[in-house]
Length: 167
Image (tube, rainbow, N blue to C red; front, side):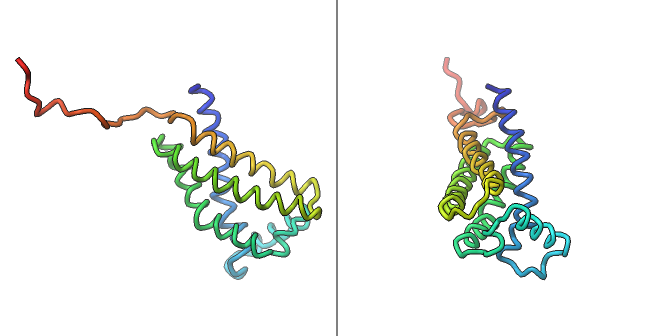
């Protein structure tokens, strides 16, 4: 079980690194003034929208802008916390991973429902979004698994000093 948890944590670490970089540099262009971003990042996002036919990026429907705000103010900080938790083997990683996974899964179901229901999305575009759905599920499952690090919890333990010895 330990090797499986380490593999899952490594996969999630890469995913959280992608989110840690992409959210403020790429996704934030959806709802923040474009003057805040260098031309290189603007060109990268425009290339992606053209290459994959991502009409959500191009048209910026209100629900999508709302999801990006959720990502920036809720999911992005959780991704950063999860990166730290994996590296430092924090016992609260399960909780933050579960919360992130539930939020990510909810966002991806909403986005994929729009993409599939609109019949505007190409298979290429769907293949860009579906892995994020999978990572949301993986984060939820990891949040439900036992913590992989050693615990130093003292809950329920009494200090040895200060106890009276029974004779």
